Image (cartoon, rainbow, N blue to C red):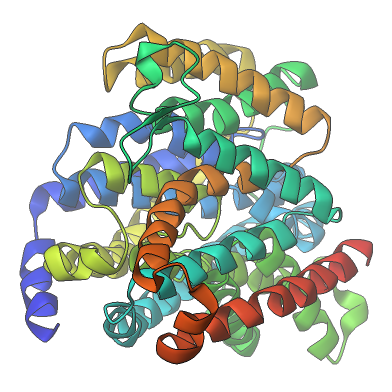
Length: 494
């Protein structure tokens, strides 16, 4: 493993990689600064670009969009009280109040520095944590992997929203969709309904773009917010070191919370930002100042939501389990590049994995430079007309779905899953459980089939005698699912 790390460090030091990371960071900040244009949509639309690049260039490009987009959402949140991404909702509480006080420059600087600190610290933690977890996961056999995949599905369903039945229903739909195609064990066609194109299963890329990007586009069109009235002008002095130092304890607390939340699949930046903000307010000696223009409030929210970025890669890389919607798109990029995340990835492509993680850490230096120099530019983006950008986004969505396989059927799949995504949003169903069910369904079926074969039909005796680890995970699964659902339900009610 040490050899993989050293080789990965050498592989990471490429000029073209840093150029594409810089482009990704700038693009992410740009799109994040546009109210309504989310990081998720940017990732889905630009995902096909990575397919034509080397893995150590294409995937870091997407990671740059991820990092830049989460921070970029804070710009309209602070300037015009319209969060560019869901992760920036908590930033509006004090960010816009600071703007009304004529201190928008301080708020933006605090958001940038807090974001970079949280992101960098969590990336380093991820790089260190991946060692022991990878060594543990490499000892997993099909029974343990099947149990962990089942646990992941339960966790995602439990954290999908207030109604667990909706999450379970979407999960079941995703699992059914994963069955379409050819049986990975028996080689028999299933549920293809006479369509030759479905013999190899539903294509992942059109599905991801459809369920994630199309509903966002429809939402922007439906909102009819063609242009913001505010100019997005930056006012006031820059942030002073003494002000940052005063908030440093809060930034560290939020970073720890965001890092912990990032490891758990299904929670994500919104939960982290709200928890970080609430914790800062509760710990403050002057909680009444929160919501009236408190720099500490901006610091708490931004450090927490950006600290999620790195740890979401832990379940993704070690087990092939996306931590949130964005890492589900990253999973598609890994698969398209021939790098199937999971226990075997560290054995076959360990150096590449460590190179990507090292790039994540080093990219934060570019993050600081680009963000600091570009804030005045991005601040003016909030007033761009959405009507000028929607046609371009639609074009990218259609072209991205078609270009990977050059098959018109993929455009039809884009339209179908776009409709599914729009209906799901209108009915208040979260599509994340469906996507997770679809992505994890095939490896779960394969691992479970191997487990049944190993047990010779006597599953219980096999688990008791030879696989106590698998049995422990299976017993813990409903307990963990219940407590997570109850915890999430309480937060939503509050």
